[in-house]
Image (tube, rainbow, N blue to C red):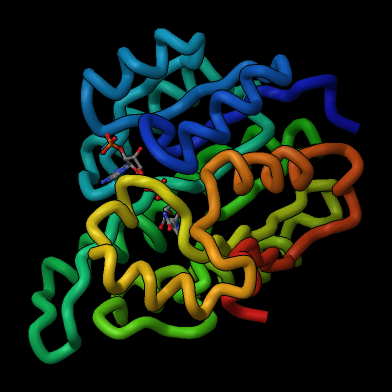
Length: 240
Ligand code: NAP
């Protein structure tokens, strides 16, 4: 059984979905740590009462420094939201090794590394929640996103295996797979393409970051204790 409002770590909390989750959980009295890649991002989190820590998942040294800080100061974290994300879209024939690796580092390798750090704290407490933010792209594929959809699919498979490893300690591991959500990540989509996408979404709109945050809030609650190893889709019906 968790204490009320357990301490939460959210990667990529400076913008978009991660920020919406951070603000929502802060509002519900959780102590929240959020990461950003820049000082500016950290300052913007601090203004909201969120503890901001610098983390670049594409940088080995940054992860090592982050690890040390958590082990020294934040071993009471018992909820982890692996949310940080980037896209480096390109068709396979043109995709560079860097574009492939950056996406793998931030999503798949990052999820593994940060989960490994925080799991140790959860195992001691015999309670924990890990939510990995994946994507509809893992299930349906997307032209130009072979790196992204492969990484997200890998995260979903990782989540199922980890759920089996730690279930006996009351630690649940689930993926939340959003469809198109209004954030900086989708801002570059042209009006014409957006119209085409919306035509394929039964609910006829992009989702809001707050809607994803509400789902995450439920999945980390005591009420969701019997849900593990699942990928929960939130996409307006784009994929069902
Ligand atoms: P966003 O608005 O672009 O925000 C991305 C977040 O990730 C920022 O906080 C950013 O920090 C952080 N980040 C970027 N590069 C990083 C790195 N190298 N190391 C650590 N953190 C890094 O994106 P979003 O739309 O909220 O996406 C959040 C998650 O949802 C991602 O995993 C994404 O793949 C997934 N998702 C999004 C959508 C969508 O339609 N928006 C759909 C499906 C899945 P800085 O501010 O410091 O750059």
